[in-house]
Amino acid sequence: MLYPQNNRCRTVFDLSGFWEMKADPDNEGIKKDWINGFESDAFVGIPGSWNEQLAEIGLMNYIGKIWFQTTFLIPEIFSGRRSYLRVGSADFCAKVWINGKFAGEHIGGYLPFELNITDLANENRENLLVICVDNTLTYNSIPQRISAEDYKAFNRERDQTYPLTAFDFFIYGGIQRPVKLLSFNDLHLNNVKIETFVNGKDGRIKFGANYSGSSENARAEISLRDGNKRIGKKSVTLDKSGIEGEFEISDCRFWSHKDPYLYKIHFELFDSGILVDEYRLEVGVREIKVKGTDLLLNGKPIFLKGFGKHEDFAVLGKGLSFPLIIKDFQLMKWIGANSFRTSHYPYAEEIIQMADRLGILVIDEVPAVSLNFRNVTSKTLQNHKNMLSELINRDRNHPSVICWSVGNEPGILGEDEAISEKAEKYWSEIFSFVRNMDSSRPVTLPSCIELGDKDPSFKFSDFVSVNRYRGWYDIPGQIEKAGEELKAELEALYEKYRKPIFVSEFGADAIEGEHATYPQLFTEEYQTMLIEKYFEVIESLPFTIGEHVWNFADFRTAQHYRRVILNKKGVFNRQREPKAAAFVIREHWLSKHKV
Ligand code: GCB
Image (tube, rainbow, N blue to C red; front, side, top):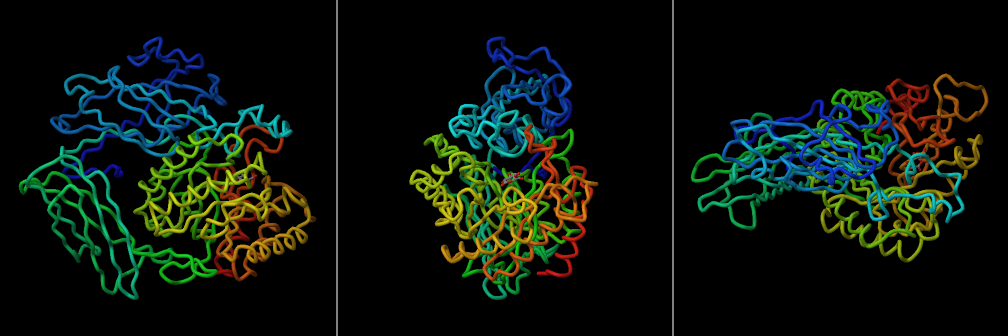
């Protein structure tokens, strides 16, 4: 699936706007024929999570089905062509009807899906689009559900949140990224795959593409541009195996966080000499590898400085906002970060595109967060693989994506199960699945303190990623001691696995305006001092490859006494204003630890 593009052969209409909605707590929508339209309860802004928008009609903590509807007309330009409906994301799963006819469904909250609606939509009258979105999770879904019985089984009833979630971010629901109508000619490109290689000063781009539709007389032209200058052109006759080829670039300008240079590839499909499809792609030529104790970008060691983030903002929830994307990148540049992790799910494609352009490195994660192996089934594994496959297909062409993260912190409940043979087998399958799909990037899995040095995934990871909260959840209030224990633990981990270590999370909650002259949790000073201590320890060890502060900004979580509405570990607050720590980090990353 390709990101939608408007050009001479492709047309995109954005259906964002005010849609009608109706909650279905009693699961009666199908019975009452809502697929043919319903009397609505309210309007909802799309894209956007339903929760904060519609809190006043009781939907803040709603888990279940919500029906959405809107109407659209098929533009004349679509006539006689293929029409598709593309949903940027629907959290967690969605079923779609056009004019009362079933168009398709999708499972997984953070990735796009496309449905062929050519035979369902009418060209001459208004069409009714109905989408039923359900944010209910199960033991088979990724992320997994958690129940009151699970907490009971582990004697951890006090850890229960409202709504019940196995993870520390709010369970937003809805259509959170844009819905678009697309039109293509019958013969069109479906998918493009780019791989790049670095050889001394020269670069190589290997491309492959699949297409739909057939023709006796079709050919593809693929050209490569450096700015406005065409530097390569290939002509390929279409055969069943797709389109393949390579470009060599001598004296190549490689993509990096310091110089995010993008070449441009242009695909054109001709049928009997007539242009029937085209697609433009920005390509960064770069190579990422783990070697010894280093993470190498284009052969040079790189140290990751940055954050775990969230898609989260007041009112929008996880709804896509272009200004917010820009603001976050501005702040990352301002503070001297070179990277972030899409904790704990795939972010909007628009964010990854901006990372390519601005030179920010991305660790791309799927929402396999806090897997409880007591409840993991073969269906969980299959869903996990499906999600990885959709993510890799979506993001593999982005130079900014330097690593796949296959989940986060298994075993928050069920530490013993998370270090069992069952878990080991599970991770062995997941890591090889990813490597079979893409051998050009490292693969990792951030692990929690509860599993210590026993996480079975460490064996499979290209580098060991650890989330550590010494000085916060462990040994609170004692920064020196936290630093000493962190150092000893990282050294022991390295001794055991002999792989580079990435500290993928560390931090402290800070409430703006709380201050103290002594180490006091929740003050701005404590957050600052703890982060500085972690920098000191991590940077003193020769086998570390990065430090990601948790979190970039404060974010909403489910309700629990441990959280003051938000998780306050943001270095920026939820409105993106800096806390005291931001200035110290900036000074450190831009002057003291400049890499
Ligand atoms: C973690 C999790 C993250 C939480 C964080 C915290 O280890 O990976 O999702 O938000 O700790 O603040 O507790």
